[in-house]
Image (cartoon, rainbow, N blue to C red):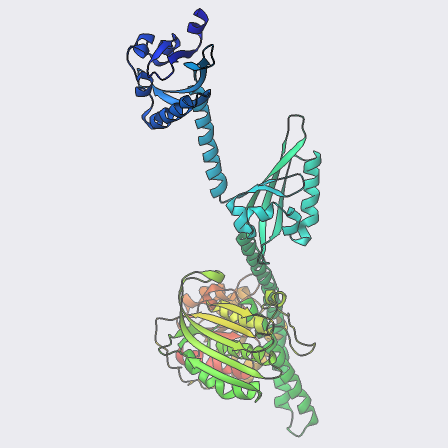
Length: 624
C-alpha cells in the first residue's frame, strides 16, 4: 500500500455501479489538492470536478465501457483545487470475483499535463510554420533525391501553374527551360552526392500555359545523422518582372550607346555634307544650263541631299536633332497627309481614318510628326504586299499605369494598324534598333522605325506595339497633350536676299568655314572668320561695334559656341546670334532659343543660311 501512495499518479478503486470512490491514493492531494476523504465522502466527486468541456464526453464514455464490463482508458481534464487544468490518462481495470463476475473497478490516473502542453506547443509551432509555408511570397519546396516535389507551397503552384499533386509526379527537369536543365541538374547531382551543401542559380521555369518565368533558386541539402542525403529545401524567388526590367534597361542602354555613336557620326558627316553641298551649289551656279557638266553638278547636290536625309534619320533616332515644336491639331496634320497617303500606299490597300471628337492639341515639331506617320504608313504598306486595310485612328487617352516608362497623364494616341503579315516575337524585340530590317537587301535602311522611336521619345511620348504572325500589326504612338490651343503658323516674312551686315563666322572645321564664308560673301555680307571661340573674342574686340551677327558652330574646342555667345551678348545689345551645328546637346539650344538667337541645322544650303540670317536680323527671333 505504501508503494501505491508514493506513486506520482492517483490510484483509485470503486464498487461496480457506484458513483463514489472507495479508495484514493495520496497522489490525489499531491496532484489536485484534494484529499482522499473528499473523494470518498460524497458520490459524484470525480464527475463534478471534471473540466466542463470534457465532462459529458468522459462520463458517457465511462458509462458505456463500464456497462460492457470492459477494461478501458481515456484522456480528460480535471479542475484542481487551485483552479488549474490537469490532464489525466485514466487506465481502468474491471476486477472480477471468484465466479468471474465483475465486482470492482480499479484505475490509475496518470498526470499527462506536461505532455499535453508539449503537444499543444508543438501543434502551435507547426501551425505557425504551416501558415508561413503556405502564405510566404517566396516559393518553398521540399525536393526528393529523385527531383520530385515532396511538398510545395502556394507560391510555387502559382509560379508554375501546377498543383502540388502534379509536381509530386514529375521531376523538376520537366518544368525547367531546356537551356537551363543541364546546369540545374548538374548542381543538384553534386548536392545529392555531398560535393555541395547549397547552390544558387537563376533559371527559367516553364509555366503550365507555356510561358517562361524567371526564378532565383537557392537549394539546400538536408542530411541524416550519418550524413546521408534525405531531401532538399528549395527556395524560389519569382524574378520575372525584374528580368523584364533589366532587359528593358539593357535595351535602352544599347540604344543610347548606338545613339551616341550615331550622333557623333552625324556631327562629322554633316560638316562634310555642308561643305560638299555648298561647293555643289557653287558649281551649279557657275555653269550654263546647257553645259553638260551642270547635270553632273546637280547630281552631286542631289546625292548630298539624300545623304543629309540619312543623317537626319540618325539624329532623330539618337534624339539629338533640333526640334521646332509648336502647339498643333493632329487631326489637321493627318488630314493634310491623307491627300498624298493614298498615292503612297497604292490602290490595293484600303485606307480608313477615324478621329475622335474634341481631340486634345499636342506640342511637337509638325515636320517630325509627319515623318512619324509616314514611316508607320510605309511599314504598314510593305506588310501588305497582297493588299489589305490600313487604319489610322486619333483619340484622347489617359495613361494611369505608367507602363513602358511613360509618365501618367493625358496623351493623344495615334494608331496605325494593318491587316498584314504580322511580326513574330523575335522581330518585335529588335523592332526599333537602328539598321534592323526584315526587308530585302537594298529595299530599306533599317532606320524608319528607329527614327520614329527617337522622334516620339524626344517629343515626350512613347510607342506600344501589338502584333502576331498572320494577324497584322498595331502601332500606338502616345504624345503628351498640351493645355494650350493650337497656334497659327507665323507667316514667313523673311527676305531671302543678301545683306550688307557684318557677320563674325566661327567654325573650327576648315572646309565648313571656307564654304560658309563664300556663301556669306556671295550674298553681300562682310565676313570676319575665326577658327574657334578664343580667336573670335579677339576679332570682336578689334571690331567693336561693327559686328551685326555672330554665326557660330556649337561644338568647338577651347570654347563652345554657347559660351562665346554668353561672353559677347552682354557687351553688344544689338548683336544677333546664329548657332550652327550638325547636332548639339547644349540644353539652351534643345529647349528653344530666346530673343536675338536662332539655330541652323547642318547641312544647310546658301538659301537656308540667307533665310535664317534675314529672319534673325529682321525680327530678332528664330524664324518659324
